[in-house]
Amino acid sequence: MSRVCAVTGKKALSGNRRSHSVHATRRKWNVNLQKVKVMVDGKPQRLRISARALKSLKAKQEVREA
Image (cartoon, rainbow, N blue to C red; front, side, top):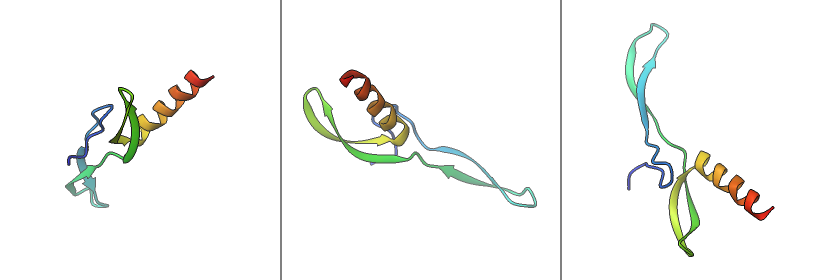
């Protein structure tokens, strides 16, 4: 199971870790994935969604209810 958001398709980013002496070694920033039950085509499914996508989905849901 890869670290990819099911909604946005966000993946891990890579870059350099910099020490005090400005020595560069490779590092990785992983996506903040959460396992969530979401209704897809009227059926509940368990998806791995990034926290940012989950926040925006909840905001859209509140707008629909209001």
